Image (cartoon, rainbow over all chains, first blue to last red; front, side, top):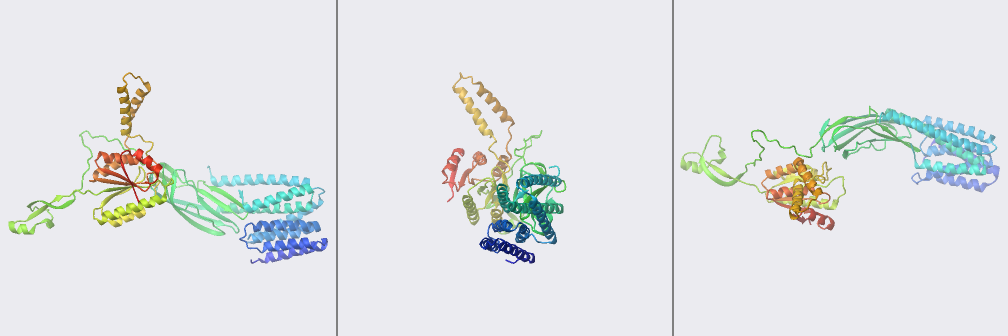
Length: 154
Length: 437
């Protein structure tokens, strides 16, 4: 499978994050196994059903594992995994997509700064649930207005 | 908006991560889950912006080949769609069809269109089963990316139309009003020349010179022409009853029936007998070829027309005059047998039936069948049918054939179907039903 220029940089960042976590924690077998599984899935044939979901799932396990070694390592690893995921789904087609990817990465940094300040997770989870509900409501209203615009009186 | 399978999987994983974060009070799980939630939210915003771009770029122009049409005939609709699709998006367009319009041939969906600007032309045929002014209601744009799918109805005033005027096709025959001078329509037989000579007579201006008997003319010393006898053709009529396209039918049996019809036509043409072919689908006349000997024309009809057809009218809800008369007669006989009866209900029923008998119309199908078979000089009528479903129209043909003293035979490939045949023999009392091998 041919990887894009962005994707190679992201693989390097991901590998660097995992190696750092490996040196900090000393648990070489866990990180080596996760990196190996991720590499196998990433280079699998795209026709394999559900491979993209497996890629993201293993990527998230990697993110959480490196977070246990050093919390701030989540930022580069998570951004790299999301970038690889987008590239595999052919979502890096123009500069606009790159811009949105950078915005997502910036928001992840802000989010981690906020999480780092929290003593417990219950309140942020409740706030997240509320935020998601509000977003769904916003999405439904926007969709209704769009449909109405094109459906006319029907 | 719908989520794709991949998105639903991601959301399920996120919920598990959030629950673990809640129970273990773990910031790493929460951070992982929140990052992906943020990613999905941003992807949705991008998707929604792209949906608006695609919808705004949509231009839909629809036209029909005829503005007016008769109920049951087909009209070709052409829809030109132009769309601009951004990168990583795909879209398709689907025409909405009004209930009462049946799509006969062609595509009503554009198929999946990817990145770029596209102009697609959809062409399809519709058959209106309802009458009145029918406006085409637009369609739907189905826009998707790797995470989400959205269907947008495009049925605003600029996407609807045109209006198709559909005139009704009569089910009942118009009542015949005789003129004050006693005039009425008559059926005329076409004169067909035979080979026998009826008489010789002197030539008069206007006679065909090919009919001059030169030998006799030389003897008589004046031009003598032969007058031939008339010829009555007794060629058979083949009626093919096509199955209803909207109903399930035995395709293998149908193919067998078409082969049998083709073989019958081939045989008749080979023996230089000729035949008449009438194609019906239930009580709907499809086509007729009367007294034709051109093989190519029959083959063309077999290829083009002998396919299942949409049935505009059905006869199973129409009471026939003969049935009503029989019923009244039966009820009256019952009274005669039992003179003491005072069944109010039966008396009322007879009154209702008699009143109905005066107002009931003749079906258009019946009068067309009568006109067709009485205009031909027939001895035999062969009806090829699957004999499934309603048989009222076959009963009607059988009745007309009996009235005109013609032999009527039903040929069906379903002779081995015990259930259908039991029903057919019950309904077609006394008619000959033959099997097609």
